[in-house]
Image (tube, rainbow, N blue to C red; front, side, top):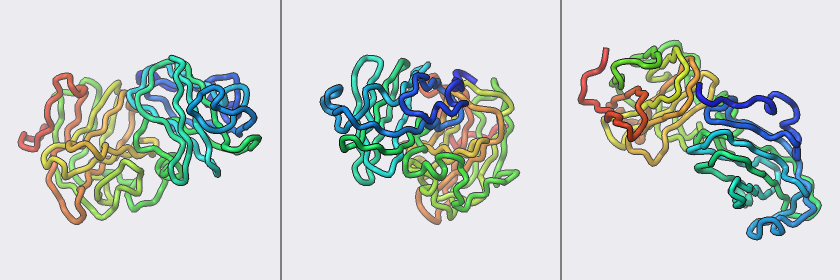
Length: 307
């Protein structure tokens, strides 16, 4: 697997201490995901003295130091606490990002992150206040504050899915790196009675309790994409990793897909959902090592299934 998590800090209790000298070191494909750090605000110095647009009070040193050892196309960090806090991040270029929790809106930063060293400051909104918090770091769009205690950590939330199925309802696949033909195509019917929104903020559609397919990866993959075709805009995609995490296709994508730069060997459960309740649209599902924009083929239901 390409660029794994550096475990030097995650493997020790020091990760839970704010203002630790040891940085959190992450690279694309890190595990476990999300990574967590706990701390307590200091609240003695106005944050605006360092970043004029930021609210709150912080200490004299960053609460956490983050070293990204590779560039992330998508990376998210957010705070979970019993009170409203400010999350301020100073990037490798010296620029600041600030986000303050308001009611149900969390303190969160997400998007592309360049490789480099980041300072993370956690501020309380009142001077001298000491607030316990947990910082979460993830490269999964399906992990956020609203699902952190459920699918975000272990995928153990009971929403009616059969997470112990030994076979899928339709065709299963066992795949090695360099498989041919590429893409592999199968076809089946989507839909079910389980609302996938229970799995996370980005999850959509109605799926069956049993997975549609089981995909067994027999090697580590540097890149893999699972994509749907056929009824454009009518289907959604949900994957459960061997570690119990749920990955969902973006709600904005008409042809739903899930891709990553690093995949561990093991069994992945795949659910294909219908965007409309009580419907069962036909779909094609494709497995490919070709990245988007690199001559990747369209996943078409009109083509014959591969053997």
